[in-house]
Image (cartoon, rainbow, N blue to C red; front, top):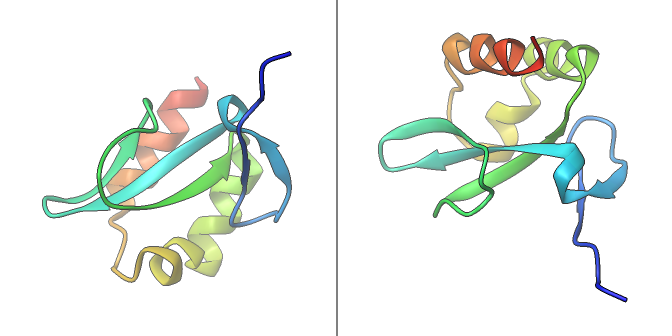
Length: 83
């Protein structure tokens, strides 16, 4: 039996398998979306759900978690991932 890596969504506080979440990372180049989950830098996980993305944008929780202002382009990219 293989172990399934679990991570916590910063918005809903649900523990979910890593594959059901998307990682947003603060790197030296800025804030980027990490589909591989392996980029270096401070990361935060979000559940793959449009409502969660909207709540993260409204509450600015990613700004607090990543300790930097997250540009709106990151949220636009997150919306495109679901389409």
